[in-house]
Length: 324
Ligand SMILES: Cc1ncc(C[n+]2csc(CCOP(=O)(O)OP(=O)(O)O)c2C)c(N)n1
Ligand SMILES: [Mg+2]
Image 1 (tube, protein in one colour):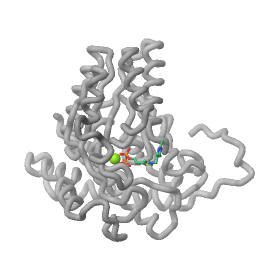
Image 2 (cartoon, rainbow, N blue to C red):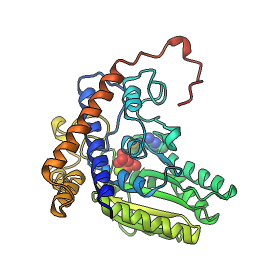
Image 3 (tube, protein in one colour):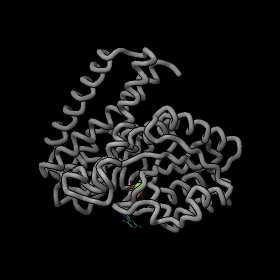
């Protein structure tokens, strides 16, 4: 792997981590209000998958969407403006966190409806097939989406019609505050159920961006060879509360232990990549600090620019004319 590529993976991980931390701070002081699901701790899934895709490939996602939007190249300024509810937002300040989009980057949006992203990616894959296009349609969703019938219908439709759809499940072990093991029969797993459609599952460590990237490349190669869908299963963990900026322990939530969180923080995807870079002498600590400084400055610039963006005008409420 080329040095510049490794540095770019790290820069993206750090950028997405810090961008979300900065936004979480705004939520704490009440300047942002739209319901928001932070992907802090899960950045490597988005960066690893999107780095293996081409710019022309399309991405759909669910409620925990910022990591995917940013990894696909979405504008941070427009995301922050959206979360502030301002007119420069990527959905003109009307959608909020669960309705973000960047059409120019082929990021076709987030939706709060579980099971929605997989269905749309199958529709896009069908369109690509009919147009004889080699583009890939990818969908991100959590393991909680496997509790929705539409995901199984999407898998079935993609498998039946040979649609090269890349399904990406970020398994962070919880759906809101319910653990995975009480949502699945102990006699099976969702992986076995996916494989029952003859869909190949590419399992990876979702906190290791290199593993996610390599697994995605393998999955894409497999899809191109077979014209069949594939599923990435990325094992990861959400650090903050399900919705909102807080840590569960700050508000005494008991559905999971702090010790469990601590064990996952030790597997931090950003720190892990820092160690890889230092150990393999890609860069030294000082080089990393320079990258971090540059990234932090650009995030703060976008934040302050978005804060100055005007509120949407009530007179425009029924217009939807801006090309987003
Ligand atoms: C169709 C539907 N049913 C229920 C919900 C309520 N809901 C919102 S998020 C969520 C849990 C999602 O868990 P998962 O898919 O694992 O994603 P995660 O939040 O862990 O990233 C639920 C049940 C919803 N948004 N849509
Ligand atoms: Mg989950």
